[in-house]
Amino acid sequence: MRFAMSYSCGKDSTLALHKMLEQGHEPVCLVVMVNEAARRSYFHGADKTMLKRYSEALVLPMITCPAGGENYQPAFETGLKKAKTMGAEAVCFGDIDLEQNRQWEEDRCKAVGLIPCFPLWQQGREEIVYELIRLGYQCLIKSINLTVLPMDLLGKMIDSASVSVMKSAGIDICGENGEYHTLAADGLVFRKPLHFQIGEKMILGDYAVVDIK
Image 1 (cartoon, rainbow, N blue to C red):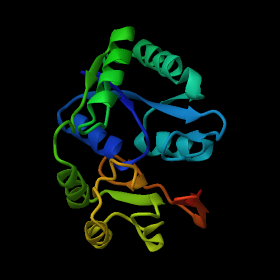
Image 2: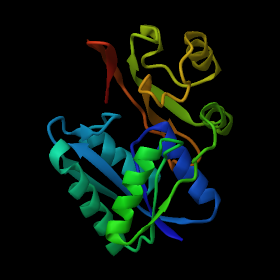
Image 3: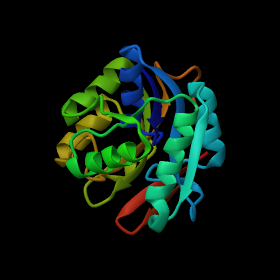
Image 4: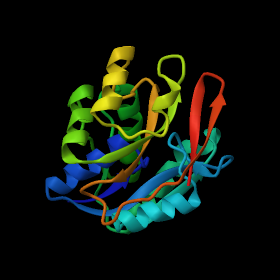
């Protein structure tokens, strides 16, 4: 089956892409939602140059969908329609177990006539993180919630040491409650690694983010 990947540049959507390829499906493009005001991808904060690098590293054309909060839904559907013209029969998502998110995505796919796919659904949050590590994926911690995680995790890779810190903090180590966000840098689905330059660490209220180029 030919599919479009709803891609966040983070660990879960990267593992979902991995599983679709493992099952023999054929990707035709990436669909990425971009915050119009910030000019970065939603939630994971990849800028225009970084998104171009992702497209090159994954060897897939990228459909970027600029949107604000009020037009997020139609912008996403417009992106899915473009993917359909490129031959997509389905759309893959990296959701794990949040029913409300899945329903929204299923509704968007139904509106444009595409099949929704959720290869990580109900897999288990800890299982996903350990599978990423076992498969050798390099995922950089881009932002953290300072109320639950220490500052020194920022800019580190997800590995056994960082997972140990997360477990000691008592958080969901998959970060599904917004405890942290990642940028995938390398792994089996990448033709070449992304080389990130880690810059200034900034505190924004309860959250800290690192500037990555």
